[in-house]
Length: 329
Length: 239
Image 1 (cartoon, chains in turn cyan, yellow):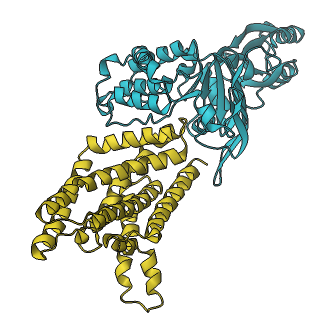
Image 2 (image 1 turned 180 degrees about the vertical axis):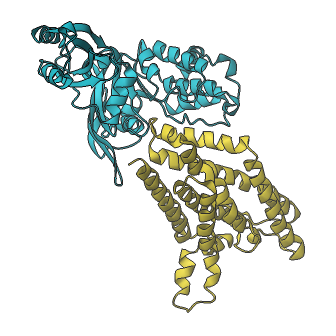
């Protein structure tokens, strides 16, 4: 915390979790600062829910520790739980209770003083758009409304931190947009961690993305930086020989591979001879285009095309989580 | 402590919002009514010993079925729906959850027992009733209920399936109850052991109007032990 003035609200320190023979989490570390909306991204079974359950104090890590507002979750579970609002993936609600009774019950468990309770419940009801259904049984509500009740439940005690496990799963597109807007709105004043395997979701709502796969953090950055830097950009290059002379693609491949900042070179099929196309991976943050240009000139080639491709977040995600992304970051 | 009562209140309200509470009360009224009036008219006795004492078709035997029936869903249902995850991520101790739910079930059974007081009062109107043994009997059956309910809560923590919770709970409760009658068929040396472990023998003492601290301690130990194990079982699920 010394290097930055921003307060760290959530910290995972080398979290590992073992379920029998399965290692669900393997040395997961990250920090979330106050006011951030962080997207937790990963394929199903990557360890998103397990991480969230450890942060909320439902599970204990096999090793490592989770910290909420500078307090160890394992050491003072009741204190940290009172600072966190949690929406589990299954959004379990008591379907035989009325919405207002349920929120009152949560307020009771959360020890909200009766003096401020009515005011608080009204605020939350309005914010989550629940005013029309307060008197209905939860069991009668549509999935979108149930999700709103789940969010309201997480905010009854006005926590600093919200942990939302797949908040939009199972909703229709309109409901997804509504819930997303609601989360963005909440994120203006609170620290939010949400998990999802839906990519547009994080691009739309999150200021930062943590990608985890097979229990490990494989990337941790902003969406824009992720699609460029962390994964390395893809550069397309097409050349032909001067005066239409034939080229040896393998030889030129070697030339480009020697340029600083290039990690891999592949010959691309499909160019019309005598042109030869290449697909290059840049290493890390390097931009090797200038070096490539000089290499083209020095080798007496004609440059037909040189451009950098922006990977979509989907590509980044697939590359990072399939485990064949190579030596990223 | 406060959260324990919040949980107990919600759970008790949930019983009375559903038909469960009314079924339990009616079942008690029917069985208790039969025990009262058979004693009164068939045997001409104005006492309630038959009501409290363990025997076939007695209220205590009804509890062997009802205790696992009213407790089976308490934890199992929350495990199945995942609500236990939400509840245990609120500032609530596992002990609050277990004891709160147990108290709700005990409140339900206590209500049903209280309703049967109308019989005691009507017996009292016909012939003067010796209230001493009646109070001891009610205390006894309440302690007896709390033991069986605690066992039911424990079984409910073991599974996410309510039917499994009920069947296991019923088997344990029935074993503790019916082992009493086994003492007549075993060697003399073992009989006292069986008498000691049976939930019904201790009830038999109290039904006679004898409040013996050994019986009270037995019931409190069974209740406390089962609730302690239930708390451990719940804690283990999010270890």
